[in-house]
Image (tube, rainbow, N blue to C red):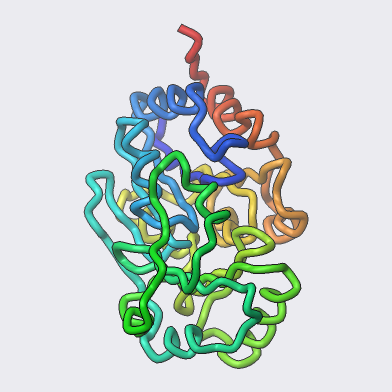
Amino acid sequence: MTPRLIVSDLDGTLLDADHDLAPDTVETLRALSAQGHHLAFASGRHFLDMQAFRERIGVPVHVISTNGAYLHDPEGQLVTARHLEVELARELIARPRHPDVRLNLYRDDDWLIDAEAPELLALHGHTGFGYRVACAEELDGIGVGKVLYIGEPSEVNALERAINAEYGEQLHLTYSMTTSLEIMAGGVNKGAALAALLESLGVAPEHCLAFGDNLNDTEMLNLAGEAHVMANAHPALGERVPGGRRIGHHAEGAVAAWLRERFEVDVSA
């Protein structure tokens, strides 16, 4: 069998309702690696957050993090990094916003936030990764992979419209959740990082399987030869990925179940 690249989003896709890897999912991925397939995670999460899941699986996994701003190899070595231009990052940091909208910065080695928001840590309980409240001098815009505004949908939607109108293709804007507006450098997305990974592996896009549930998965799913959209996906994702196959719900382990069927994997032993 021709080796495939199997790439999956995490939250709302590969992870269960508790934002964790189910035992069957771990065993399925191990079996696929043993068959000779390449594995990759692609998430809006920070690399340091994602590597905890990779380490638990215990087989080689490439990591596309921060919506494509960073690509790491299975040994954890940085392959590529795309930062926001410093002046653009500074303008986003200084941009007026509702006081309840939290400003977050993903940098190479940390996650900064402008004020305490303990409710955001629930997603990261299984990895131990968390934010650090930034002091003023740290908000200098240097080495920023992603600016993330988190707040009520109406507030972040208004920011999206205004920023799109002002900056156009200088920035790439997307959502990982309706409350999370994520901003990277222009041309940075999971699909662009996946294209670079496919080229480095010598794998054609038609031999790639991709799984996702939200708008930040759009480019990745449209590049893959076999695109899979979760039953719990954002309502607009199916329209943006017309060739995508609809599979089950992330809380029911649908990605692992589909992969076991597709590649005849048995984890019952």
